[in-house]
Image 1 (cartoon, helix red, strand yellow):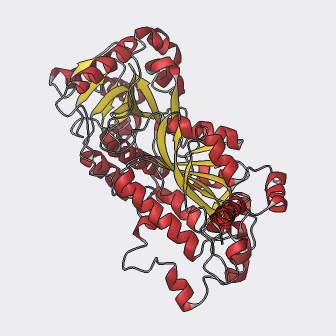
Image 2: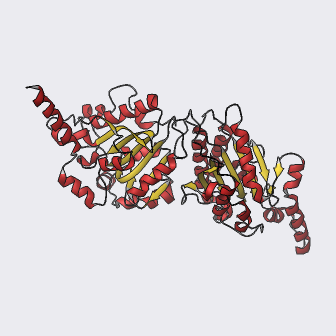
Image 3: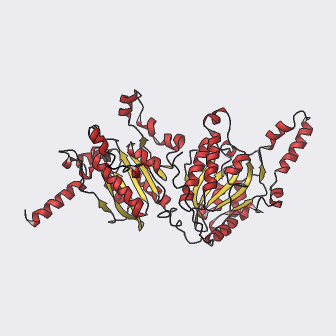
Length: 515
C-alpha cells in the first residue's frame, strides 16, 4: 500500500470515529433535546482548543471495532476561557456509552495522568447506561474491568482534591457516572437527567422494584433529598455556564490560591442596606440571602445545594476581589436550626474550602441543632462531632461574625469561641449562650409566678449580650452591622499578607466528598 493510501486510510478511520454512532443515533440524541458528546465539548471549550486522546480506540470484543468508535467515551485536554482543563465525555450514541474494557482503560489512564501530572480542573460530562453486556459478564471479562493491576481501580474511586473535579449529569447516568458524581467537588444536574447506581430495567430484574428514572435519580431526588447535586439547570447551555461560574472561584489545583479579581472598592457591596434585610426581634425570622448579598462584591455569589439543608447557606463569593466561602445560618428555615442535612452540608463545604485554599466566613444566627427522636435515629450527635472534626482540622483562615443568636454546640459548629477561629466579631444584636433563654427559663424557674418568671427571663436574655464576652476577650470586637463588609475586607487584606498567604495544609483533602 502506497503512502497516499495509507494516509487516506488513516483519515477515513479518524472521520469514522468523529462521526460517532452515525446519523440515525445522532438524530435520536437530538430528538431527546440533548447534544452529542462532541457537540458538548465544542460548546464548553474554546474554539479549536480540544486535544483528544484515544480517538481510534474501540471495543476489545471481536467484530465490534467498527461499531464502537472511541469506545463510547471521549478524553482530552482543552481550554475554557483560555484556562487549561481536562475533559471526559460519555458518547451515548455508542452503545449508550456503556463501560467495558477499553472504555474503562481510557478513563482510568486519563484520570491518573490528570491527577499526577496535569494539575488542572477535570470536567466529566456524564451520560451512560452502565455496564456493557455481555462484555463484562464472564470471569475474565469482569476482571479486565479492574485495569489488570493490583490497585489500578484507585483513580476511578478516589479523589484527593488535588485538582477541582466537576461532574455534569447530562442524561441517563447509571453505574460509573453515578459513582463519579459521588466523588466530584461540584455536581450539576440538567433537568431531565438521572443519576442512580442501577437503571430501571436492571433494578426490576434484580429486586423486583419498578420505578421511573425520575423517581430513582431525578433532579428533585438529588437536589432535595440526597444532596448529591450542587446545582440544577434547565438546559445544557445553562449547565456549561454553571461549570464556568464554579471554576471562576477555583484554583487550577490545591497548590495555588483561588483566582483574585481587581478590588471593586467599597461601592461594590451594599452595606448601607444591610439592616433593611435584618430584624433584631429575636422571635422574628428573616431571609439571610440578601444579608449575604450586601457583604459580597456586586451582590453576586454561587450558592451550593440551595434546596438541601436550606437552613444553612453555603456559597462561594468574592469580597474585595478575593474568593471566600460563606456559611450562613438562615433563620427563614427552621429558625436557622441545623438538621442532619445541614450538618452534612456544613462538613462537605468545609472540606471543599480547606482543600482549595478558600478562606471561610461564618455568619451566625442559629438557636441550636434540630434534635428529637428522628434526629437521634439519623445520628445527629455523630454528625455534630464530625462537622467539628472537620472544622478543627481545617487550616485555611476562619472568620466568624455572630449576627444574632448563637447557642450551644451550634455556636461551636459555626466556628464560635474555642472553635479555631482566626477572627471573631459580633454585632451588638448578638446573643451568645448555651440555649434559648425561654427554654432555659422553663427549666430553671419552675414554680415562679408569671411576673417573677418574666423578670427572670428578661435578665437571662440580657446576660446573652455580647459585651461581657467582648469585655473578657472571648470576642475580638463588636461591630456596626453596616461596617461588616469593611471589616471583612480589612481582615482579608491581613490574611493576604500572612507568610503563607492563607494557603491551607489540606488535611481534609482525603475526606469523602459526600456525606
